[in-house]
Amino acid sequence: MRKIVIILTILLTFQFSTAQEQSSLPPRDTNKNEIGLNPVYLVAFGALDIAYERVISSNSTIGVDFFYKVANSDKNDEDNDFEIIDTEGIFDKEIAFTTRFKYFFGDRIARGFYMEAFGMLSSGEHDNEVEILDDLGNFLRYDDVEKEYTDFALGFGVGGKFVSQKGFFIDIGFGIGRNLFNEDSPEITLRPNLYLGYRF
Image (cartoon, helix red, strand yellow):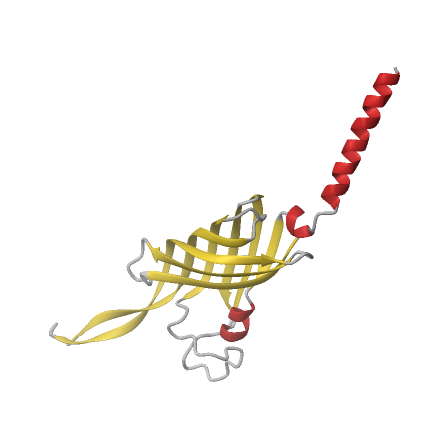
């Protein structure tokens, strides 16, 4: 009986000390969920870009982000004060939903330098060069015409994530992808990212 009590005491002591060690770890090493916002897009371009990411191992995460261009990009809209930079030609997409997988290098938990693969479903308007013909069908000139599109792109990116002891983070990255299905969509899509967020 005494041996059983001793063994149980040792096991309980070990479990208690392990739990204390885990609880003393900073949030960046124990928490698995992240929410982030891209403030540059919001302030400079009038575009909402929010992201959610889930830590699935010490070296990998999966995530999604939602992009929506809040500001009106109409050239003739003189009342648009929200957009402080002319975004014509910067963002063809008006709305986009992106899924991504990140692989982190090194021994730190889901932080530091990473490589990323992503898939993006986007919709917007893109300038396409078309032939302008006269009434007889003779060529006159080429002209740019805006056409609506919806397309899916695959791409990759690189970046770095830096997480504080309290769980706040900054994620800076750049990605490039190719739209696959719609000839009216831009051939190449770019993803310059700067997310500020919190790991919880």
